Image (cartoon, rainbow, N blue to C red; front, side, top):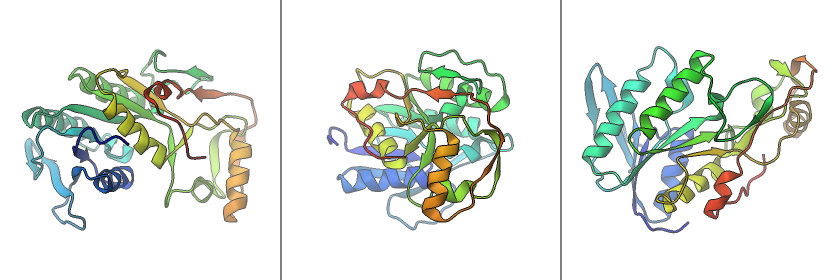
Length: 256
């Protein structure tokens, strides 16, 4: 990681955001990572929450890069995620942010079989797609950038444990689109380091795409869990390609 920039604001210091804060701090960056609560377990934590139309925050890093890593569960209809993102973009501009990077999801692509890249059309055929796409557009309109993340795994997030014994509403022959937490963090720093020359949107997806049957059989065996059941065995590959970011001197280094 090249430390060309030394200030970082991470909106949403949850499972991914917290690890990003720790990585950046270890590299000597000035870091502020936000939480809704006012309690601080780590020195980089700062409060950031929207109550009605009022923003309550402790973020004061100027000339920093901003990364929005608010977890997907916060994007449900009952949350104020769109308004929070709007407030964050406004504050980042006020603090002369060097750039704003949104962690989105490959869930923005259609669920139909096919191969999807950054140039694929977005149909917005369901509410989740629509919310993801609208958030992306909000950031892109402010000259920000977007990372579309595949399914995440890493410390304390093991796919074999998550699906053990469950019935999954998918085909056993569907392929997985996954990525390791550390590869995502490395990708974030690669985009920041090449901010002026990089694309506006990148997929972050490990190049391995085993079938769900093979993938979860291995994971459940490793962790002693019961193999999940699938609603279908039809071949229906939905593959998201994440190779474009390799043009930024980035390589996927962590297995799925």
